[in-house]
Image (tube, rainbow, N blue to C red; front, side, top):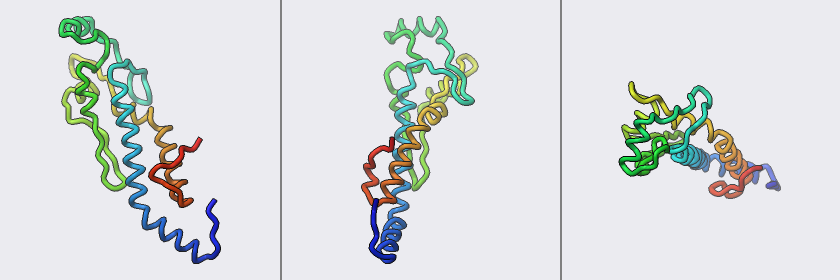
Length: 158
């Protein structure tokens, strides 16, 4: 634990914390968004159970499986063909706010469903699945920042 020899030293430490605050919160937002992004990318191609308000992914229709096989893709990896949909999931961070999403219309249809395809949500469930890891990122980073340690690469809290 950091020791202070005077109130002045403690005040200087607090001043350094305040100056670094915006960079720390940006870093936390980026690392948390990266965690959710990777989780979302990893979900595509594997059937998902229901989580929070999001439904379980339904089995692909037999006609879809047949078409996938005819086109040379694996028969039963929902949402995964070339990897383009996975790669389209990106993150944007501005200050302490982050967004994870995709400009790929196929992911929108996949996530929300269509009249002919049931929804297979990716982004919302990825955030739920990432919650524990995101909390650890926040905790470890804030602890390292407050104690004057390297907050850009904090040791994870157990």
